[in-house]
Image (cartoon, rainbow, N blue to C red; front, side, top):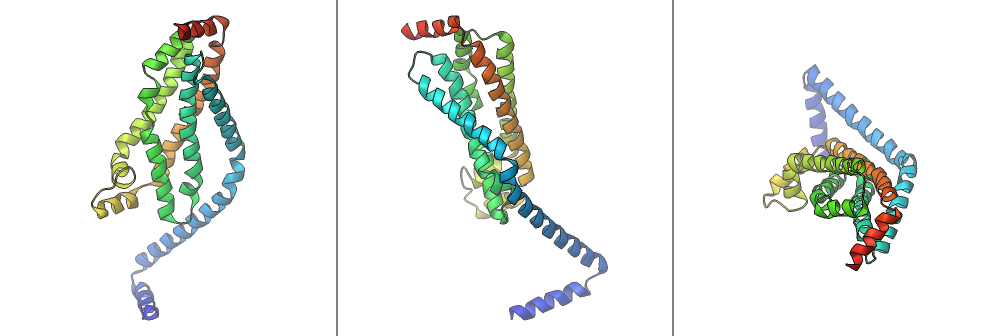
Length: 240
């Protein structure tokens, strides 16, 4: 029966008008080309990104070390800056862990599942908690120059703008298919079906760029805040 149905479908295609046959051939060739491209990228990606991955892991371990070191110490302002950076690097590492499958997995459903995880990670990162009164107090205590404060706030503002894009453009996808589940199964299915992975990757690239911008500025902040006066001020505040 299945073989007979296949033969009938082929006959119907051959009997179709020439533009229909050409359109079908183009779509089939496009799907084949996309599958081949994904396979090639999947093999190359671990090699092309090994340098970036190593740098990420080193930064992750460094920030973790200093966040733990200052967690209960005398230098609470220093801890706050490492806490913000480590928070960002955790989100970065989560996205990096699923990026390859979101981009290149041969199964479309799996690609879109990992893309939804990326969206949720960016969506749930709370930029306002990271850049509010606690950060301003840390800058004041460490006597950070105004020019560096401006750079740091600009980097965090860029991250908030990326997050705002996610909350605006992917609010329904997040609520219907990953953070919560729409009780209407067809609503879930259609949201997943219509999700464009390339748009998710554009968001992820902006988020990565914002994180990198802040990590570079973080080095300047720590250098500026490591003077004797700054450390003494933190110590005196902890005593009081």
